[in-house]
Image (cartoon, rainbow, N blue to C red; front, top):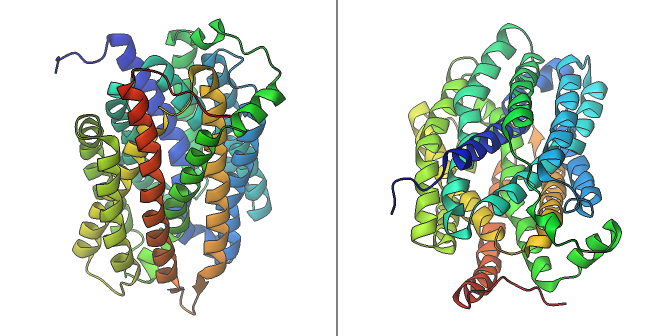
Length: 415
């Protein structure tokens, strides 16, 4: 393998997309640890907190569908800036929201714009990088998730305790503005897909993309892929504090930080292995790890900090392997002229299914006197079942991608 896999500009693109994902992911993930603060401070139930999380997902899903028809008709840089600007506005509203209702509205607006960011970012990655190195690219971009845990969440939790729960959102706004400026001045236009115009209107493009059987199989797999994170993550903080006995002020930020450090280090290696060993093989390994650890974790009672940390690290290793490998594999599904639409719909499906999963999780989980969460183990069993089915679904996607690669041709979806 050559030493310089990426050019200087490609390295910049990876970095900028990683920073974009860092801010968007942090905006979503910070709600989970803030749950232990928000629920008592705003006097809301687990179901109401689940609605705050799922409101973002539902609005993100709706905007993804609306944007799908237009996603391949504009320079991807311009699309990135448009939606990132709206995301900054929505996050600013979160930073000044005085109560639950205003926070709920702010999350809806943030989701309308932030939910499309992932699809635009993936379309850019697919346009700029070849399939043979996309595992590496996704490994580096996945570092955004880990970085949000290493830097964002512990810092956000610290200042949320010292200043108030609004501060983490204000912190995200400042970082996002800086990233937006870099995109404006240093990212090149990404418009090669416009050289082969589709010649159909946005609505027809949306229907055409939704009618492809191969695309539909990918969307179905994405639906189940979203189940795990959206079901467990929103209630991970209250579960850690009230069920596992993790101290909110001292141990919880440390738990997120140390787990994030491990994910930050392993992300690029997982991406590299997915390119070398096989994206589907890494996905299966990650899924099996997740299926073993999740039910153990969800059934724990008061547990020593070191054991919770070890289980978190192993569980996140499995989850990261699933995300990196599946994301890289799914980028090979659409033809170039459908990439933007496919990624937008796929992101929309992910957000909507995740929103439904969060809402259902909020109905399943109950809060006992003293704050202990009940039925969290039920969520774990659902995640395991979804993971098992997803292994089978991703296998058929892997077969068709592999078949097309061997024939040295771009996948042509069947009508």
